[in-house]
Length: 251
Image (tube, rainbow, N blue to C red; front, side, top):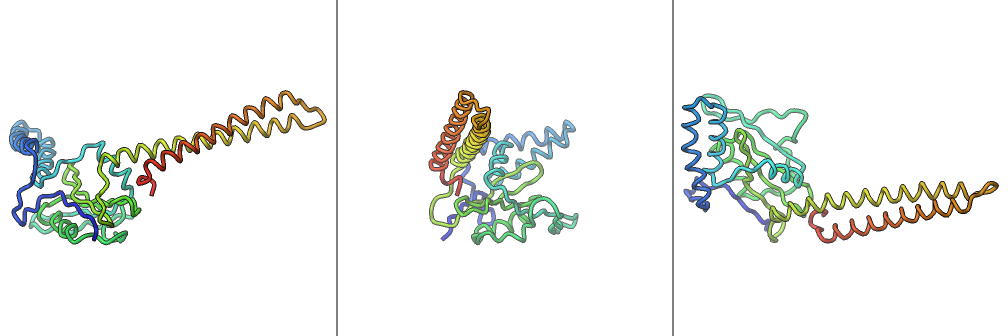
């Protein structure tokens, strides 16, 4: 059975969100701010506050810009559906463009749990979101996520995985992405060391070759080449250590 976590409040079953006092305080603050912003003529700000309030009432905290960036880096492949609503109250899906995220209907990387499928229907009809999106790395070790947006507010609605093991935490994702960056840096160090070694070794070989050989200069050049090889070896060793320590970020 797949591991599945749904974070949105199930209003259809009248379940109250298990939110913290800070979350309830945020809702009360937004409810007070919105009419004040409208009265002051700050229409755009009022709309942004209303979008955040809609997420808060679902038991969700809107993601920060940094969190959105990290989720997109961890789950780079997106499948999106956008919703259009007419004045009569009907909702229809917006036709996808030829560029941008892949069509939502094409998602077939894994089997989406029933709870998530039910939630997707709610996101369109009950929650009245502007769009829904499944993001995945298309790797078995990195769990897909369901995101939704209303106005400028974006929230994580659900996550699931293909086994009974726990889902990777957000802090582990942060550390895993940092590890990827370090591994890439050490890969570049290794590549640079190989290039330096090959370049100076070739020059040293040319200077050593007769008839006008300069053995002393060739030895110095080969010494620089050896340093390049040592740097490459250190880079490869460091990269392998990072990949072993954070194996879940590279599978």
